[in-house]
Amino acid sequence: MDVSGFFLKLLIILVAARAAAEVFAYLRLPAVVGEVAAGVLIGPSLLNVLQVEPVFSLLAEIGILLLLFEVGMDTDAAQLAKTGGESSLVALTGVIGPAALTFWVSRYWFTLPFLTSLFIAGALVATSIGITVRVLADLRMERTRFARVVLGAAVLDDVIGVVILAMLIDYSRVEAVEWLPGLKGLVFILAFLVAAPVITKLIVPPIAAAAGRSKSKGSLPTAAIALILALALAAEMVGAPALIGAFAAGIALSRKSCFSFGPYACGLGNGLSERIEAGMKPIIDLFVPVFFVMVGVSINFRAIDFSNGQFWLIAGTLTPLAMMGKAVSGVWIKGGFKTKALTGISMIPRGEVGLVFAQAGKTSGIFDDAIYAVVVFTVALTTLAAPLLLKAIARKDGQGA
Image (cartoon, rainbow, N blue to C red; front, side, top):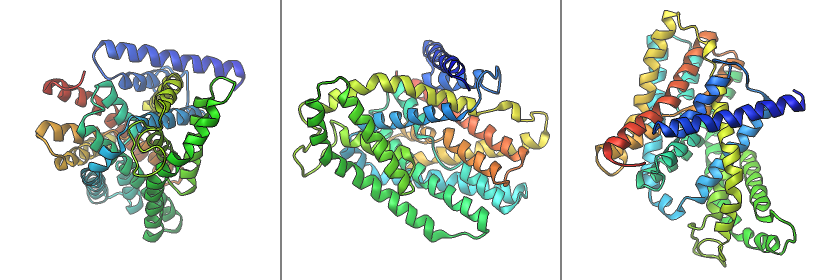
């Protein structure tokens, strides 16, 4: 792709994302659904003016890192820790439920191969953190207690999803399940998630002091982005998703995070957190929509043979099971039925996480074209349906915007 082609396609992405977000907001629908829909419109499914290309995939990766950084900065670490028990129960239920249901149906109803059934179950396990947190923000519900439970559960879900994916890929190579490497990977990831914000909190003040003495503009945003990239790289090195590193960076720089030691017990002092947040906001607002548009571009409805009866039979069975398996996870949260329903539905979107599983299954030869189409369809439906269900229940309950 030449430079002019890149500029044109980036222009299309940004304009389509903003236009669709405005239209959906006008219709009182979550803006994130509009951005994903914009990707479906301009992608291979309809107009086909944009495909999944490495350069735009990298821009999308930057977008999801910045989104999780923003979520971390707005997260009260102490409150998040208080909901840890509920978040763990929600996450584990949201993993075991859909995995068990979809594996059993794939293996024993549709008699698919054992490894294929495992990959289908794995693809429908993890929750897309990006989709979930953006929907809650659009509905102005990101500060509610149930939203903190969902955030913690989604982070744990993503960690479990990565471990499962790594184990399944290894299994597909050697045809033997090795549990110990997966458990070791999980321990390393959780240890990183706990240690990274604490260590970062201690090294940020001198970095900020140096940035404060800088004679050039943009020192604080540059330092923040450098920290995000460093922790994302560190997360990858311990086998965790890069976005976990960005989330940890946001928690470390948050004005709400408190530790019992160090020169800055809460926040970073001198309004530093607020200045970093203000400097990063325009960058975040530019890159995050690119991620959601590329989620839509990744969903290729043309690859699906809608005239195939077997497709509708399998997809029509797996999709509701995948949604119900996640929806019941809200039973653990304190509150009434609607709070439990909002929590469960918030865990439904698969988004880019499910697409990664689907692509891994296809490239490894475990999925044929028909099963790949089923998984992509199920991921797309959960991604698009969950925000609409959340909106409907929140409006009925009198919550949100």
